[in-house]
Amino acid sequence: MSKDTAAILKMNHVSNKWELDKDHIFAYRYFDGFTHRLLSIQLYVNILYQYSLHIDFFRPKNSGAPVFYLEGTLPAAIQQQFEKITKIKNFGLKEIYDDDTISMTGISGEQYFFNFNDTTLYTSISGLVTNQLEYFTTMPETIFYSFHQAIKSWTKEVFENLAQLHGIDLS
Image (cartoon, rainbow, N blue to C red):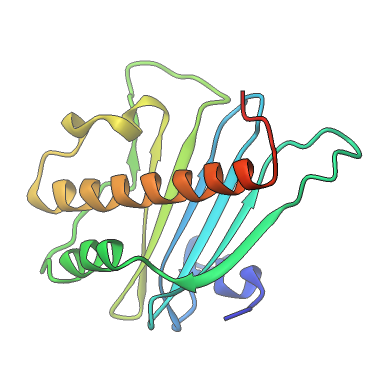
């Protein structure tokens, strides 16, 4: 599946919108925000549910800690969650889910890109909203929220397992 990530997801500077290449059904990007680990995760999934997962984080100079790059088949449970999303007739999500009562910088953020009918749909979740179902009120939003929680949980588990395997202290 190795493909340059810049070729998978790119900004169309004419429409000022993100475009996911036609061979991919969704992409997910996560950033920890301004934390001690500066965790960054990028997940790209193609039409066969094959993924490439890129995990980067702060490493002290000369630590020898790797940047993680994995490929494989997306877990069946997440495939099923995604298939629920594809069955929604009017998949209307807000472009941004955040707590608009406060403004903070340096907080975590997550971005989703979905390919539906040759169109890339984009949504982002920032800050504390990422773990609060109350911001997702419609039927499509609650289905998306379940998918979001599954992706977030799986990528976190992969990162923690890899960090433990390589003796990386996450505290």
